[in-house]
Amino acid sequence: MSEPKSTKPGFPVGLTIATGIAFAILCGLGTWQIQRLHWKEGVLARIEALKTAPALPLIQVLTADARPEDLAWTRVSVDCGDVGGPPMPLAYGVRDGDVVWRAQSPCAVLAGPYTMILVDRGVVPALTGQVAPPPRSFDAPRRVIGVLTPIKQLGGDRAEVLKRFPGRKAAPLVLMAERETPAPAGITPAPLPAEISNRHLEYALTWFGLAVTLLFIYAAMLWRRLRP
Picture 1 (cartoon, helix red, strand yellow):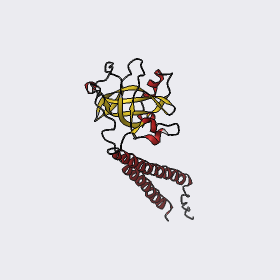
Picture 2 (tube, rainbow, N blue to C red; picture 1 turned 30 degrees about the vertical axis):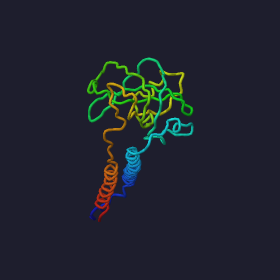
Picture 3 (spheres, rainbow, N blue to C red; picture 1 turned 45 degrees about the horizontal axis):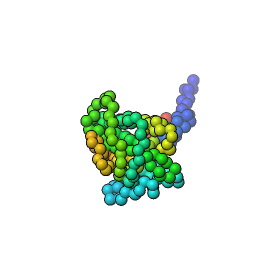
Picture 4 (cartoon, rainbow, N blue to C red; picture 1 turned 135 degrees about the vertical axis):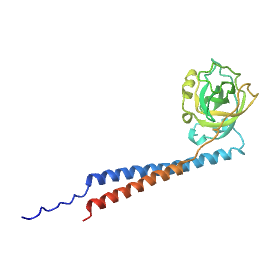
């Protein structure tokens, strides 16, 4: 009586396809982090250049052809006109690990196609750490020097507050005040993040490392499966 022949497992087609898809995803995430690294380095370089960059008139910078993302971190100056209306709500934020509330005000301008820009005037120190601060009102801004930030990058309800002024064409940017004349009482200018992390290279190496590890695991499994 002959012994039964042993059958070797076939080539794992399904597992190979799944491994290939997972490898492509991991490499894609690593590549995306490299792209983010270059973008973040550009942002940090622009912020560093701000330390010596002169302030340009807002009317010169804010034109119909200028894209908001291209104007990020541009230092400008503007003389604000009165807009009127009820006091603006405070904007929630986090700075140095604490909950902070930022004062914001409308600024009437005639720059390109826009008649108004939102000014972030800085942090109200007396409200730091409060969960539900009481309403606060401040004098309207007059002469402001600061940096521009696309409103969509700030998140929150920044764009919503502009709906209070349906008769005005608001710029898709926020002017983060560095200095005001006269200086408003009770507000500390804080135009830039206290610290901007740049760990994208670390994240990229992690994703690429996982991709290589996946290949080693797959190769070891395949060798054990198909060896004589």
